[in-house]
Image 1 (spheres, rainbow, N blue to C red):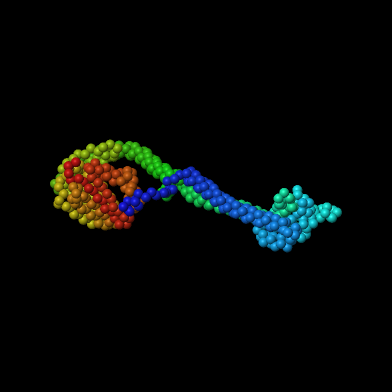
Image 2 (cartoon, rainbow, N blue to C red):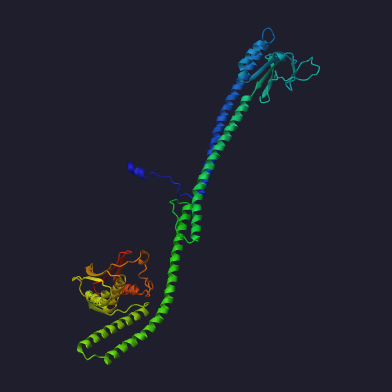
Length: 494
């Protein structure tokens, strides 16, 4: 059950959210956070303000009570020392001065002795000495100690006992705590707002770095593509706009790379077509002298027939071999001219070993001249198979001649046959210089050759003939380590 609950637990992921949605979420989060902080600060400030007002109200009530007690004392006069004592108790709480005035607004008792005798103006709440000729008012707060940064408020209240007004009470209070409270609250609001927007700026920088870096990578990759380097950029698992842009960019690069390959193949095909047209013309011209040579050999054999029977047989064998090669060349020219057309196979039942021996017999004089070691190993398990004898012999002869040409200074030529998985396998191995790695993938392409003499159609035609027989051909080679050509021909009927 625990495993089931774990598997069904929802997971919140932002990887699939788009950039527009992320920015909207960020702005909403900043807005909600800012409103929340300001609301909390407002609640705290309101609570402190209510507490301060309550404190000042209590102080004011206490000051009024003390003043009334002093005014209604038995001796009828206020006691300055008592007022000073009370003021010293409330001074830290905001009460600065307490004065008692008669009905003529003259100060008769005060916590500030300098104010006794002054007449307080009810409108301005300022006092002046009645015998001061200048009549210049003095600050009612006394001592001139109230700095401009302190805010003082004067309260004048009448004192009535029964139906008789005994005088007035003048209370001077300082409300600096309210100003400090409001100032501190504003500072807190500014700090909270700065923190919220600081977080927003940090998140914006993070998003800009996160999204600008892939965009810069795309810009650099675009420059590389313009220079011809069609390499893809690393993909990201993000499901947002940048992830989609990266994947689409890589798809575009793949398409461009494929188009480039197709363009190269098209150019190569066009080039081969032009070469083929030229070669076809040359092949037509070669056929005429071949026919003349063939007829001339027959004429020479009749005209210069030796009387010696042994020499006559040797001449007949030599002429027959020459005519056979001329026939093979003529057949190859025909195949060359029909390279773009399906081959016509003249199928016969034959043993692969016999075809290989005929091909080796034709190349025997080259093997002797280059002093090559010939090693053969024929399997007796291969049955007779249906092949086009002439074309398959031409294929094997072409492979053998290539192997011989790869060993101009001597070496070993090995030919082995085997029967594997319904195929007759023929391996022709040489100990020559081998094939370079960059050329190995092109050896079967038409007109590709590394020889100074040749048109590069030998292996291309060989591959085509073997594939027409439903077979396979493969070359393994390392530069400087010889080559192994494997030919597989199906044993089952075609």
